[in-house]
Image (cartoon, rainbow, N blue to C red; front, side, top):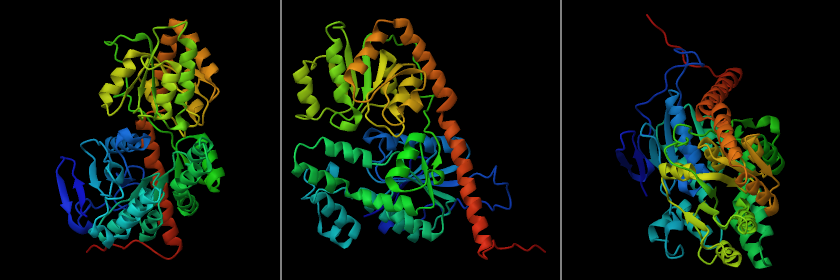
Amino acid sequence: MSIQEKAPNNLTVTIPDAIGSASNSRVSESYASQSSASKPLNICLLGYRSHPYVGGQGIYLKYLSKALVEAGHTVDVISGPPYPELDARVRLIEMPSLDLFNEESHIKALRPKHLKSWSDFYEWWSMATGGFAEPYTFARRVAKYLKKTPHHYDIIHDNQCLGYGLLDIEKQGTPVVATVHHPITRDRQLALDACPDWGMRLLTKRWYSFLGMQKEVVQKLSNIVTVSEQSRKDISEAFDRSEQDIELVFNGIDTDEFKPLPEISRKPFRLMTTASADQPLKGLKFLLEAIAQLKPKYPEMELLVVGKLKEGGQTEIQLKELGLEVSVKFVSGISTQEMVEHYAEASIAVSPSLYEGFGLPAGEAMSCGCAMVSSDGGALPEVVGDAGIVVPAGNSKALADAIGHLLSNPELITELGQKGRTRILETFCWKVAARQFAQYYQRIIENRTADQADNGFSSPQIKTA
């Protein structure tokens, strides 16, 4: 299995057997030559699956890497498939996996060569027995790659992989940071609550068995960061790590991409949401119930869901039961520009999630000037603030009342749209996040240097004639 490096000019280089030169030509300058406040950093971001359309983690990597580059830093992204869409100035190092989700039959995907690799075999065996091994195998592959490959990163920043390999990387000497968007224990509990029988509960517990590893890594890793006050509290509770030992850097929104498009007219009765159709955490069930309640009064109302409808799934069944097949449309695999255009057509964006560690779709909708109706699930109230209407999570009547109130008050839709855009510009911008991360990275590096000095290690001295 080979590793692909994609340089900023989009040239891809194959490195056989995971050995090659990741960053040989970009050695960090001496700390003695620049002040820590101004020194550009050589940063490596990690993501076990990072395409923007597989979830918020891909969006996080895409925009954080871009903002860090624009702040003057050098950024590599090491990612497993599906691979991210990155700014041309960011180098992508592709870390192949078996990518079993894209195989017609993951049972038949095993090849004799995979038996030579523990990571490959374990990834196949785990999937075959109902588990999810990608966080573990990705971190293991990256640790092996970095050990064999010369690199000169100032910091390595993981995006919620939280595999044991991160502890190995930290032992190799480079400071490691891990972002935890929210503890996946919330997802597991909601999934268990939705299980119809004990058999499904056993399968669900098996799928989420990686959580034991993630808890141990969060407890042992030196540097953990999260994206909201709510997540900081939840991580502390779920993973037994002090809140004071978890850094907070809010997510950002790319306000240059996600912006109002005044040349596109908003459709007065168009609603929009982003949701994995059959993921209970996203609360789509309650939004559909709310629309069914409102339809008699607002027959023109329509909902656009950014997500893929699972054939024969609970959402499809619910649509038929409520008679909403014509009123609700699904789109998936769309570009960022297409997403922004959809937001430009919508009058109201809805985030009905039962829990969000931050809520990027809500922030993106607000940045596009959509009036926001949101649940109070997780950190959503932190994002929406007073620039939208916040209702109790899991309450379809409250959602219906809020949406109905806006539909009967078009001037309020315009007012909230403007307030939302202003709030994102002032509080949740990626430029702000990149600046805060750079300061955080510098503190970590300086503390590590001080610890080394206390333990008798010192930087080599250069003598001049």
